[in-house]
Image (cartoon, rainbow, N blue to C red; front, side, top):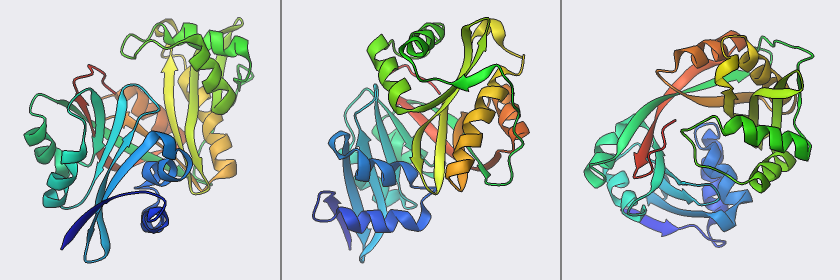
Length: 264
C-alpha cells in the first residue's frame, strides 16, 4: 500500500538513508533535506516500506524549484498534487512527462543531458587568465557579466556578493574584465554539481568556458569522486566543451517551465 508522508525531524534520517543508496541520482534531495531544511519541503511515497518516490519544493532560489522523482507513474500522480499551482521550474525524468502534462497542460519542457566526469578521467585546460572569484569587486563583475544574459531573472548585487562568498566560482579575466565563469553550487563527498557556466556574447568561441569549467572541475575532483552538470540537449557548443574536458552523458532529465518563462 502506498503511503505519502511529509518529511520532518521524525522521519528525515529514513529518507536520507534511502537517498544515499543512489546519491548521484538523488543528490539535490540528499543535500537540501539535510543542509537547507528551512527552504525545503518534501513529501515521500513509500510502497511496502520502500521509497517509491518524492516531490521536493526548494524556495531559496527564484523561481521556485521542484523535483518530482519516481519510476512509477501512479506514484507520481499522487505526489504531483503537492506541487504549487503555478510559477516554478520542475525537474523530473522523461518517463514522468505525461503525468506532468496532465497536471500542467500549458507547461513548456526541455530535455537536458546529465553529464559526469569521475576522478582521474578529466582532461583539464589551464591558463593564467583564470582565477577564483572571492571579492566584492568580483561580485560586481559577475553582476555586470550576467546582466547580458536576458533569459534569467534580475538579481541584486547583494545576491551576487552572497554567491561569491559562499559558492566555489572561477572566472576568466581579459584586461581585468570578467568575460566567462563557472561554479559549483552543491558539494558532497561523492559529487560536486557544476552550474552557471556563462560567457559574454562578445567573447564566445575563444575557449574561455573551457578554461572556467576546467578550473571548477579540477577543484571538484580534488574534493569529490565526481563532478556532474546538466546541459540542454540541443546546446551543442556547450556539450562539446564538457566532452572535451571529459564529461560523459549518464542520463536525461526534463526541465519543465510552469508559468515562469525561464528556460535552461
